[in-house]
Length: 314
Length: 314
Image (cartoon, rainbow over all chains, first blue to last red; front, side, top):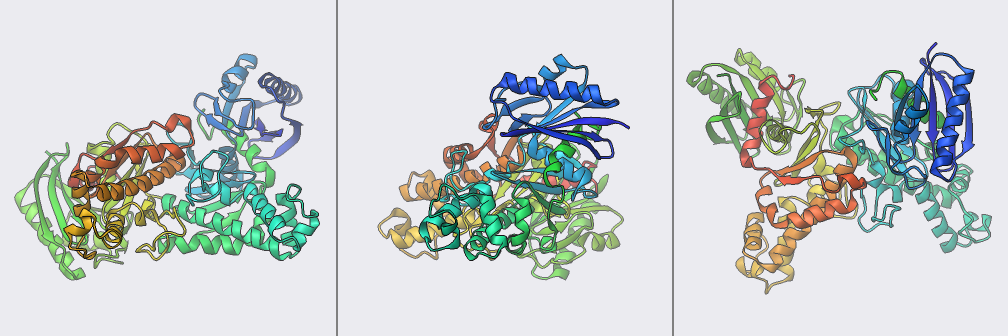
């Protein structure tokens, strides 16, 4: 059975897997992401060498990268959290191995994973959002990933939605990512810890806003804590507003929400859906499904494998 | 030479033209838009009958409608300013004439006109905005109009960009259309007339905010009036912010701005471009061209003809 090496290079770790062409994951590992370019290259060479030594019928390696990627050139355009900016990753690996390589943005890979093996299967037009520390996404049009003219499409997190809002990591104000992401949950939690010293959230960290994290808020919300629920609801409302905008612009059949924060969003599906539907202009689109990904942290790896199985041109 | 009947049904007038397959306009007329559905149908039948009697080699009629259109069905989904909501326009006309009909949203037609015969020619991926009383648009992907799953894509005017902003005609707050359109120019002008009674704008209407119109503001701005320039600049900045968002989402090669207000926007190209570039996340996209349509009010008719010349499936 044909197989692909699937790699997901994030800011803190590199995950990789051997995946069959029917999208079964045979093996899966992870290593910490090295700090330098040459160490990242070495780590990738070790992974590929090990995979090639252990398995037959490997068609190639698909690589998702936490950054902006020129898919056609296999080059990393920008990568704020990773020592790969400007690197011709595909070209480098092709010089080391006689193997097909395909490099793409990690959010694109996650959405491709949903298309091939997740909540997007069977749809021709949909959008996927990955809500983690930041907010990314991908667009499927006519059954294929739409990358835009330069491979930079679907920068959903940097849609300005509140020009007077918080400053984003990108330097601008009021990007959706500042309102609907793990970072947004954490910012609101810090504000609550400081402003509401008697709240359970504040007491849980002894009043120190620097200690509180997004997962703590999600856990408290699940346990019914009022302040935590308020925070998650606000984030859900902004996410819904963003989704409503994307529906008005792209008219998809379904919206799939994945990423590290997604597993906590089931708590606030009602505000997400209500907020999205309220602004959708086409009455026929008000009830399109907005669903949480079921692939958890495998979406990116499945999509990276999909880059290899001939479904996406290099 | 093959020809198409091109019709553009707006809220106040119906324009129509005979257009050759190399996009020359042979004749062009307009009538007032009747108030009732049956009178609109009759007006269309008169136009088509007249065209068929006057010209040979007519392949069909392409019809742009100021409303939401199900292109595949040829049916009008919604039309706030027109007695055509819910009407199966294509089916009705097919029952009257042995001729090919293709019905689409007027903004889609305008963008198709830009693709076939305007500023979008030669590009594979671009977006077009039509700035008039409202704000609409269209998306070209891979050399074709992208209509979305239900034909409702590119509702650019209803991207919420300021959740605390003015109430939009659609009922929601802070849609881009409330900030960047003829309606926005007029709202800001009314505010100026009331708040700055000594301004030239206020004096020009004897202090009566009900009299001032968008074209008056554009004319005053062109003559150098400070308040009018301030209004146009603010509208330009919001339009630029919207365009920046669309670039982040769709990664086009070029952005074409048309519609009734477009001819006044050359005054504020700098704020438009500056405001768009400021939020574009891909450094490679910061200098993509943002251009004013040169087709004036022919874009929609040329695109309606394009619906017929085999470039777009029915």
